[in-house]
Length: 391
Ligand SMILES: C[S@@+](CC[C@H](N)C(=O)[O-])C[C@H]1O[C@@H](n2cnc3c(N)ncnc32)[C@H](O)[C@@H]1O
Image 1: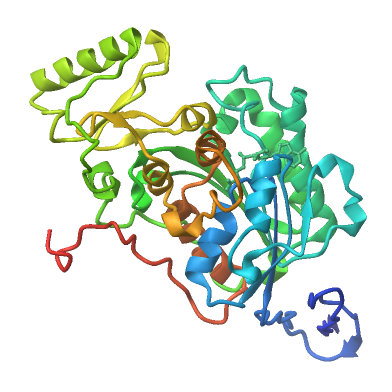
Image 2: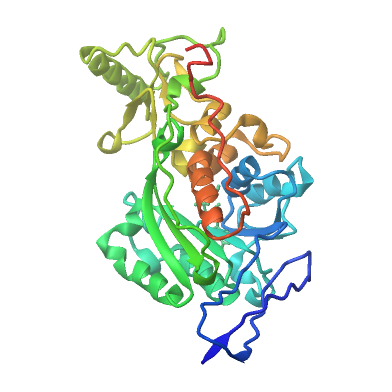
């Protein structure tokens, strides 16, 4: 009876990437299930495409000790996104290689990594967009990540996109992805809600987790809701002399919108001068939304416009508040040092992934894919109002 023994060989090249070479040896022994045992790497090599304001390494830095991972590559076509990635205060969070445009690089030269994340532009699949899917140039960007996975075979790969990708119109896209990776990967797919991960935002996002079959060490489990919830009230900046509860915007249209929302809320027993109502004052009447003590999905456009109107402050959100509504800590994002305007950082925030939602998922997926010798947890939000915090 033949069995195959796989010998793991560590090859160190180009900034220490450990890869495994399988050597087949025929041995006349009784049948045994000898599995290739890949060790958890000392330093996890990570890479991401369409990195934006980099929720990915922000989440990793909250879970892993400093120096436990190395950012082998990142990419973004936006100059100010790249500036931000290169301006990080901690040199260990800067990428070794930063690509400008994924179409203009030689795929063969993109480094191998253990963990790869890609978050292609979502307009082609979003319900607000015209749903042209992969026919749209932007939709084709999704395939860039699939090709990377098929070619480089990272132990773990994660894709994030809008919930609209689960629409029946895009069935072929999901099926194509599944077929491309089915031989080597286990694929898991789920829509997660930001509000379940201590984020005060109604935002749903699709995550696809690919774990290489030979790497699975623990059963993969989706993260479950974390308590207590964080509300908009919890993340608002302290009141300043410039704030004025119930103040209305200056433009006539926005003024009418806020008055209307406050009137209706009052009828429902909600006092918008004390409880924050986040009102979208930039949308047409058809798409108008507001949230009581929560913000509705922040988009690239709305983020760039300054975010929603906050009723109990009588102004739009500050950049810090927008950051906190996506789970970033203001001191994690050096946007001013990178020379960005409020509009530019607002747009990046609108495009980003809620850090807590991604962090909880990464902790589970990395453990499952054998990237960690011991389990790790994503920390509680510092804005969570626990009994100990006296609320
Ligand atoms: C949905 S956003 C990703 C946000 C990111 N995950 C974050 O945490 O902020 C998509 C990003 O893809 C970038 N992008 C679009 N086309 C690109 C291309 N050809 N090459 C590289 N990046 C591109 C956009 O500039 C945008 O920042």
